[in-house]
Length: 91
Image 1: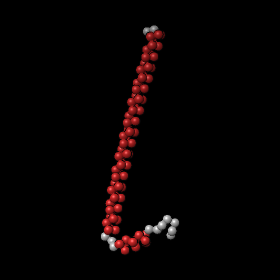
Image 2 (image 1 turned 180 degrees about the vertical axis):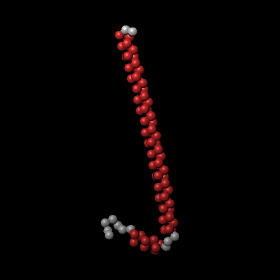
Image 3 (image 1 turned 90 degrees about the horizontal axis):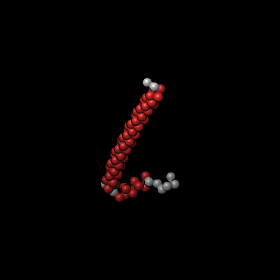
């Protein structure tokens, strides 16, 4: 085996290793990006569910208030509003 053949073989082996490393790195990056995208999707879904649950809760509370007010006499509603609602800046 001549020196030129040995150098050529060594260069080919180094190139193959570098290529494999580069391919592995690209594949690893792709997996990491896919995992990050999946996490973002899961986080967004959880936030959407939480917002929907809060919306249902607020809507139910508003309905309960509306029902309570509709069962009160007008004088009672006026009194409740005067007692609990203050103008901004007044104490």
